[in-house]
Image (tube, rainbow over all chains, first blue to last red; front, side):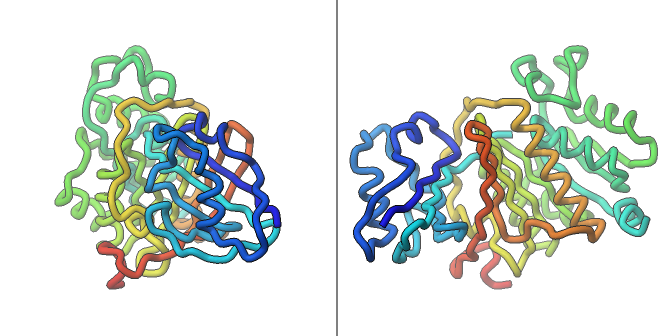
Length: 86
Length: 224
């Protein structure tokens, strides 16, 4: 199956390193996608633990604490790095 | 007309009136909210002028709250503007929440945002959090006890960045959308973004809406 990846918030340079789409085995979970997504990032490019994670419009937690769940074909994995600037 | 009268009878706190809070306070004042309370410490400095719609070069070095309050009053004589020259601490945030109908949170730090969130949740009033970073703007609208609050999302404040990119157009757009949500809630018009995060990625021109999940262990709102 294929899922879409959306990344927004801080660090566009990190977003530029991430693919827009991932191909996963059927039955893959969110943590499988995140592992595949971040495996090639250097230490200084890792996404912040407080980055929000959502699947197809539903928030499931932060990278540090999220509810793992199965993904479906054409799901959108959304990562929102925290922003606070005024 | 009824909605306009509701606005006239309302009080809104906008904490920090820089790139986002400034446009938000301006739209609320021009829109006819009865009382607009702004809170912001310090003096206006030149690096901030790329997003200060309430200030200008003539205000450099002057206290922001006083100067910005005068400008807001000049835009609508029928609106009471209260200018507080500091960021509220816990006690003051609670006191302000008790005499407001809604809080708009626009500070640069999560500590301040979470403080304002706590004050709003304890007072049982809606809370709108507007944030930006570079080409991204985000908006969260909280109905205490019914939707996720800011602390449900961020139990610990994410790290503070002293220096971060600001695009004035993103700040102003995000602040204006925050004001729109407040106007909708106060006037009883439309469908507010209760319990959702709206994200605008200006880099790609994408709006995204995410439904936010309450956290059972949230120290701020789980008991409600």
